[in-house]
Length: 222
Image (cartoon, rainbow, N blue to C red; front, side, top):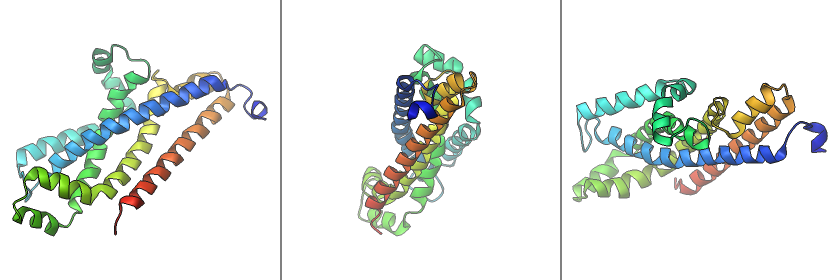
């Protein structure tokens, strides 16, 4: 049945490309989550009327986030080629896509983290401060737990964006379903290969959305 619908698809290669896409997305999501939380906390805590209020640190961090968030991903990949080659030793393969994926997604997620933290009731933070809680305690016991549903929801959106980024990275040789769809599908006029890769990408996206929504509902105590 599948051979009739997708006559040109090499399913072994398709599976390998799927694993590469999931590897790139998974690694990038984990590191983006950590970096995004750190950057988001810095943006929130150093902003006006907050614990570490510091206009200079806020402006510098905000400027860096805005710059990297604004650069189109395909251009960012090209700009980071020297850095990627220095760090990874090559500009081809799944690992070579990771620096651009992380640098492209972390600032985007950092803004979502900042927004999530700003939605926390200030009374809860003030109550913790009045009881003599340290900044580290406020971060771990108040800020992160209170904002966790929004953080997971934001990470879900970021993860889905990263799936799209991996497809773009594939066009310049990063591997994955994007690379397969471009080289074996588009360049060789095999529409069935492109269609199969697209369907698998959609399945991955729907799975991420379902998992993210489920975790968000579990965490949301409202």
